[in-house]
Image 1 (cartoon, helix red, strand yellow):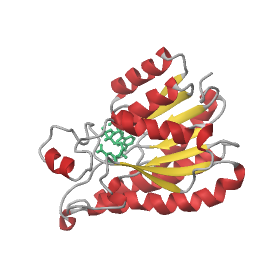
Image 2 (image 1 turned 45 degrees about the vertical axis):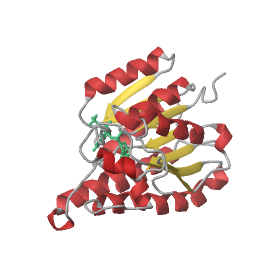
Image 3 (image 1 turned 90 degrees about the horizontal axis):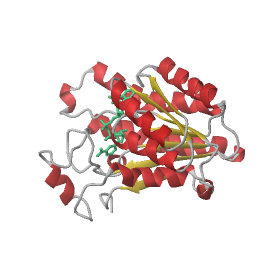
Length: 246
Ligand code: NDP
């Protein structure tokens, strides 16, 4: 028997990149998996097809994480579809980049909306359905611990908020047997951060291992945190970054 059999999961931003790898991995470990996406319905459908090919129930929900009502509705839809809600992975993200003087109020609102407010709201909604063994896992960034260059102030600020969120919520729900953790990826080869883009060599030079991670490297950590084996890990920030923060 797979260790996540009988569990129901929701991965926000599961149509591509790290979120898609997490969704596939949780399904391979036995969970029914719902994903949200913003625009790419076709890619979301392909991920759901993979989940179903693994013998699990899959569901794709279009829900802009900048809209808290849509996020709450996606959580409730997942719980209704699968009859339970055990694992929430807050993954959806964007990468605002540029000098702070040029950042608009709209960009600040959107970034905080997707990276912070949506995480709070999704977790709040998920906790109404979760019981013993529940798991809340957020995808942060290595920039929450170490910012090696300029241009990422807004991004780093939004991702570091997840550390306080994770520590606080871990205390709030620990007695219910629910754990809360944040995974901080380093440079990971996705549409957001292609390993062959300009500047990628500079990112490689910041790591100890000298190469980008694959989305599956992040999915491995998330699957471990989602499993019953990880019940004593909570309130933690876990770097999966090839030594970026070393
Ligand atoms: P991608 O850009 O490759 O994929 C982003 C995913 O999030 C897509 O599924 C996208 O959906 C979804 N998404 C984006 N905006 C929204 C929104 N407003 N509402 C709902 N879904 C949304 O990114 P990655 O896979 O690289 O990143 C995943 C997470 O990992 C992010 O939180 C990112 O900050 C973090 N991260 C990534 C690193 C990297 O090097 N790649 C490093 C450190 C952290 P759609 O397909 O519909 O657009």
